[in-house]
Amino acid sequence: MLTMKIKILLIMTLLSNLVQAQHNKVLFVLSAANTLALNEGQKFRQTGVFLNEFYGAYKAIVDAGYTVEFASPKGTVATIDPHSLNDKYWKKNRALKEEALSFVQADSLFNHPQTLEEAIEQRATYIGFVIPGGQGLMVDLIEDKHIPQLLKYFAETNKPTGLICHAPSLLLTLPKEQNPYRGFRVNAVSPLEELVIERFIMKGKPENRKIAKQLKQWGLKYKCGPPKANFALKDRNLISSQNPFSGTAFTQLYLEALAAYCLHKNRLPI
Image (cartoon, rainbow, N blue to C red; front, side):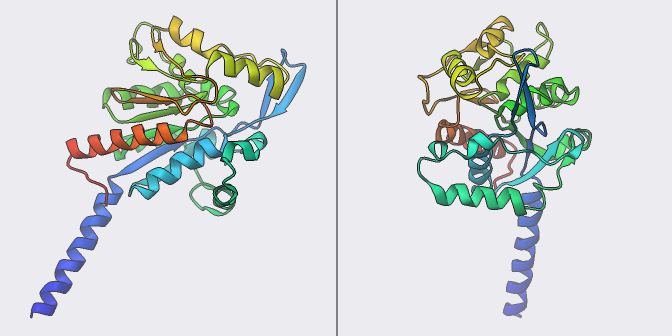
């Protein structure tokens, strides 16, 4: 009889953990763009999602016990920016780089993302929202009508929203006067870093630039660290970070925000 009670208890615990995991889902929205126009269309460059900005956040969140689901425009698989494979962004951690490359090549969920329309239909099932950086989002996500809908929902429900490097520019898709993030402190790629990227890496200027200036004009309080700093900010439910070297700062703040939200909702991760 005691053995049967233990078995029943174990089964109930497993079922409880399964239900709990299903309610601790974080939505990752990824760009599917692969080409960036520069110098008013006179030059084109390969672009996409910055691999370490994506995988660092993904791995930290999953390792903390949360479940991640992916969405992109039209459910298209995200393109990885080839420049993000440069070893300088991995702090000589080639093992993590290889792990990330294997993940994007083989992971079923990553390679079969849902559409943004489907993500909006499922938005109530997510406790958090992350958009990794990379210039790709400046091509497709910034023009997608579903992005402001998602940003508004996560703001209204006070669910942790993580915007990495270039992703804070998507806050500009919300109306200026009715922007729920107006007055929030925010970080993003710094003006100096943006200049270096344009002059020495891309060797050309994209159409949408000067992100910090635009955020200030939109009523947000922009703040940044030095170039290549491990820098991120948290203001209420918004967590934003500066560059590919800011992963540790971002994940610490984002995981703290998730834990606080789960504690408030009595949804502790398994």
